[in-house]
View 1 (tube, rainbow, N blue to C red):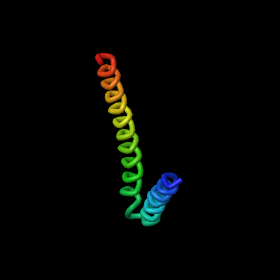
View 2: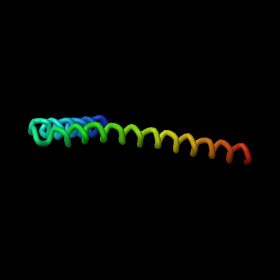
View 3: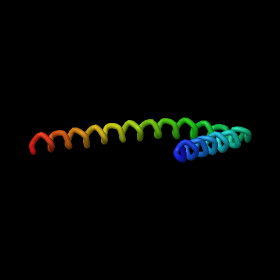
Length: 67
């Protein structure tokens, strides 16, 4: 339960901050860049984490087979 509350507050803070930036005409471009780049880098980091996890699991399987 704690993780879901933490995730919700992080997401709502992200949306709230972006919404506040979008409300100011001079900050619209930085707001859109912030929104898009945050999402892109977030997905890239998730994919990197998944790939690293696969590498670790494969190395454990190889080590276990040798024993």
